[in-house]
Image (cartoon, rainbow, N blue to C red):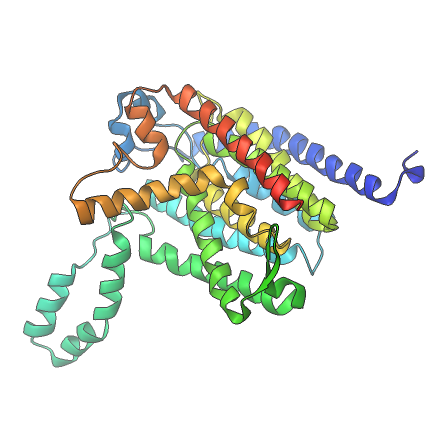
Length: 377
């Protein structure tokens, strides 16, 4: 019967089929993943989570993390087996796996690692002046810019703790963004070197698109990571986001990317089923950083950078709330929100976790629909 359907409709059936396949495969092996995480005690601890000061969140202690592996592994395996296309899927999967590896290392170190100490700027300056060994004084002087960099970016993170520190994350995310920029600017062709502006057309900004791509990948990965703070919140918002991106990819004729996005949405549906309160597992950095990077690079690969402002609206709002909170404390000497990111602000205002999540879902879906409309212009 499908032989008589128009080619584009036939491709749509394939895309939907991958959504279903990914969902079924994820449901099938989710119990094994849950048992693995419980068996090896890969669970949330209370020693380095400031949000557990909220009374209603104390029940989350000992909930398995790294549940995002359900999506990352399913998407990677199905893509490699059935949708491996050198031009359009191998770099997004590579960037996703690189970012997921970074997140996985952070998750494991936060659970099983040792406390990490970081030398302050004042301590480094003192060592430069008083250390007995002239070579060590030179070494501390040469590494002073690195210490300054660590301290500047460190204000956007929590205490160093056991995991990967902020400056280390940013450097590895910069590498993922640089790979994305190289691929889009030099490998996909001249068409991708211009930015599509809805209602206007294409804008040529030359080589400046390279740092812009790096910034978008880094910011989006961190935005999804920051939003993963309540049961079902990030997963429930990523499903319509990747679904919309799959539709826009299909409309634009990028079937391989449409299949990749549909595969991700299907795996996320299964993940969210197990992540709804009370969660059987939580996404962890392994999932949020990997999926955030994949979201950014897939949107860029379909030349939908402007659409990201809508289909990732709540994610960006959450990330901006953290930046505003930090700037408020450093410049004004006070907090702008009761707690950042934004979902904890509403939780402290008295909203239940379920109310906060579902309202965020509704608002996010509204902006995703606007994003699809804008993307079709």
